[in-house]
Image (cartoon, rainbow, N blue to C red; front, side, top):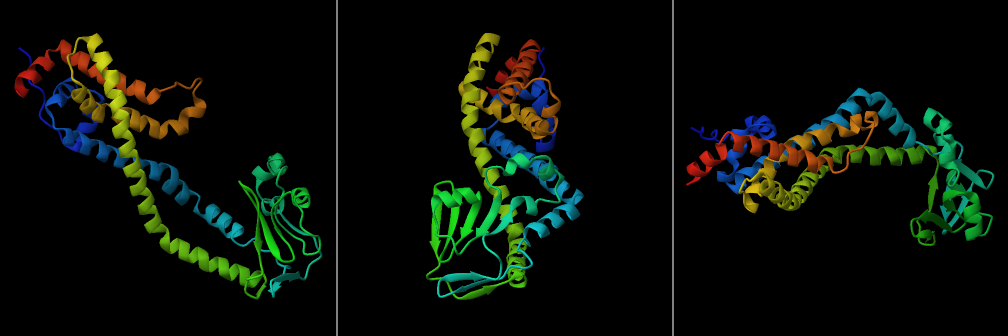
Length: 303
């Protein structure tokens, strides 16, 4: 006599059962859609939480001093000797021009930059200050820079080409290192104060986006499962296979969490690994449930 399927489990007990439990899979068809949906939301939440811990929080706390030092370095790149005056829409400086602020100088202490000089071949400078030479695209490209501060405009290279920002309406200002660093420190302090809110917003946005993606993805999964179950002789409907997908993606979800850490050590890269794992989990459990006559017990219970 076939055993009746196991009763509904709580979230954490459902995690291992979603990987392997023929009785659990035999009873999914009689579960409500929303029970499976909220399980998937919880699973996605747990996945994102572990991802944040693995790739953001733990690395930051482990290398906090180095990261803070790097942030300090790149937020205080203003040269010690440079003074800039913008008055009546025109720029004057106290340095010999053209004056270059190069990337290699900024990254000079980084071993990575020293070992990979080719990275700076196309764009070698962060900014060039030249208030004497008239602007031309040819000269801008020759300077191999991201920005060129000219006599009356700032020229910036972006994905759409080179944008000119006139200084005619700019306020009169005197800029030196002390003033620049003070302004940057204010911005960094405000950014740090906003960081928790930004982190929560980003987490919620990723959660909503990933859940929506999974809902669409499970339609494809359900179609593939229709093919698999018809071959196996399991008369599941589309909606049954869709609900199975809520649970079958548990294993590939957490495998994908750690794949970036081990992918470099794998001899080959398996395409569609996520889908293959989900199909294997679902098919193995349903086939075992069929052999144990649990599916018929589930149907009788459902009736």
